[in-house]
Length: 288
Image (cartoon, rainbow, N blue to C red; front, side, top):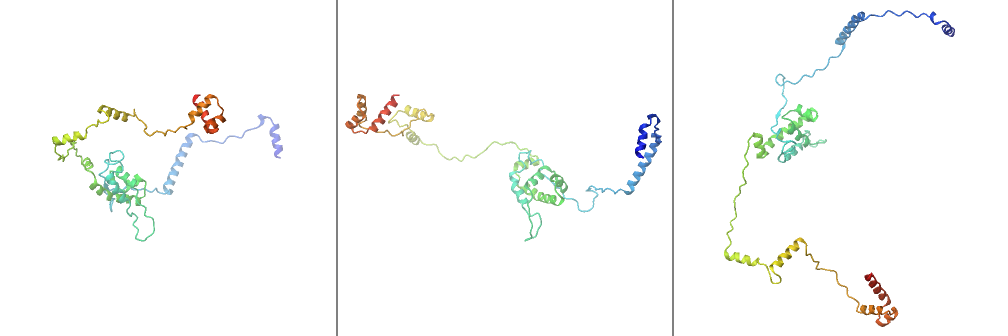
């Protein structure tokens, strides 16, 4: 049946096919109140059924009850740090910071297991460099730490600052208190109690410092001294040893010049033919 119905649709002319009537659609004027009603219903449902958001109230120091958070004034703010002459790790304070950092900050009893890791010296120096008022919240924001761990750094800074105030140099003390000091010239006490030499002592000194002219004149000694400093007259005194010449070498070379054979020269001089050949080769090499 389905195939017959499809065949009938194909064979019928196009004009004879009737399209079904379109459904009635709402106009924009009719859609607007409907949209407003849906929005009002959705808002009402969200108010009645949506969970209430958690509101974190900010801490108000004036109105909050209970113990107020600890706030420590940092007198070394803008006086130490990477952008100052003292640097992030001042020499006078480095021992204090390292000593406080190595304290037991975990509060464990004796003979109780666990790893007591010391505080970071770098983080303590960064806190002293960066925060004018040191609190647990400001340390948490600066170092990205939890509340309990940040409170340890606040307590450490509370121990460090009084010790640094006592050990600070005078120049830093004047800088922190706004005292401008004028530079003073260097002054020292002359403790030289030596007396001037007498005429006899000067004469003896000149005699001891005289130039010895037994072998050369004073000008020649001066010239040798200058040549020695400049390296112009450097003479290697220790030279290679001079090799002694064979006593019959001169005679052998004369017989070779006369044209005698090696066997005859060996018979007359007693020098082996091997030695005669070597002398002959050395002479030819020098002549070349």
